[in-house]
Image (cartoon, rainbow, N blue to C red; front, top):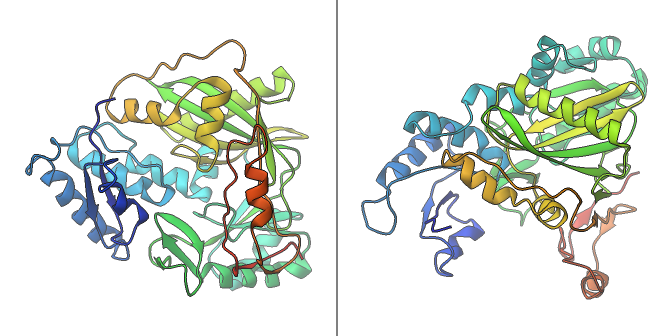
Length: 378
């Protein structure tokens, strides 16, 4: 596309090596353990310096594929007058409690919920929301600190368990991960709101809707049916694309997903919207104001021929997005995550290598290393 890329990241990021590989033009290091304001000021100075050394031109657009950098990019775009999300919209999407308030204001389905700020509020949260319910960090990601609670008797203990887990989280390469002696990263406390939201449990299958918005209207919506999550932690298991749900259900999910994006006052961008088709109709789980991670890009590209990275680049440059979408899917795509069936230590990944060599397996990548401790469903 003729684009020169400059990456802003923590000094020890893996992406620093992309300059030597000729993939990007510049790597601009920033200590991401600083306050949000300090990171913003340092990033703004870096961006404003682009073009001075001849390696790049001045900045034309800013984009991120990393959840924790979405607020930073919104502020940078606002400060520099570039196309992008407003900081207010991003803040509302990343705060699940504010998201629910925006949906309720727009007249959209909203499960009962309560924001727990201290241990003293646990009992009233249980009485307000009822059971079964789900406890989750108000601005978390990747199911970290998420757990199902089925009764008032176990609520307090699970809340304390989640608060303890959240206290160990670190930020590494822009993502929240469980801290360990060899994980690196910076402590998430002070960088992310780790308050806990108690929310009514939603039954039914989960469906991911990947949306491209441009000019205030959706231009593409791709569906992936998710398999049942592994409870009580809601770990992802598998998914298929295109969706196998009846067309009327797909239509209602699309209408809800687009309406939720609009209710949060977004007008352009790529969004990974997680929904459930419940016994009472479609409900939102959350809106991610960026492309989904993992296999999401490849799934949409192979199934529908839509390159979400390309569309994000168009949108960040202020170019209208109009991806051509075929009438029928190009192929079917399935993916799965191998969850630990019990807690313990990972001994070997040899079987994963064997899977990667099978016919029609695009890739098989480990999320842990041998020697890592993993947590099962018990």
